[in-house]
Image: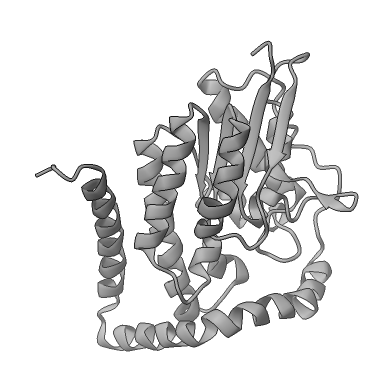
Length: 285
């Protein structure tokens, strides 16, 4: 490690640092983590390739080639929420893309960091008929990430259901991205996991925030201004399908067959992972 360490972060707005402003830019959990990866005197070269709105195909097609060219020692890949917010959502495609990204990163010898995340419907407080379909999608993505993280020996952070998720002080005014406190929690959790494996040797990121948490009035102001545009941009793509999913949810509730929707989502995950195995080992079975 005497020659320094290179950390490259791939993903969407979460990794870009949205919710943790410093000056006229974003900082975020990855930058906070980078500062604690190596002991004093050992330089850490940090490259953040994450872009707001990125989906798994963006990471595979655009961010991965740039990351591989940098030959990182550590690479984080945290993505998938934006895929769940599109009418084109396909867990088979998501799984195939993540598999390719994880494989390419680890084949170069980099330590891979991954995380599962809470579903956006719950964070926005959507009613059940709208929220449940999104929750199933995010659970499907998380299940794939869990399985592939294990397959590739990733340092995986279970961030979907931890207590901090329910703490409003951890989130920014938009209710979708962590605030400074949340980003610091993510950085500290990753540091703990890496340190336990002997892969983080610097000072852990401080949990102490530099700025106050957003007030309730700030959150309401965001929803009334910027939040309206955020929802509108996604409604043109997702809303028609989401309304159809909500109608399907209502029909199953009326019949008492809601469990079928859960089983269908679980079966899709199993099928997506089985397809990867079949591609990797065509002579199996």
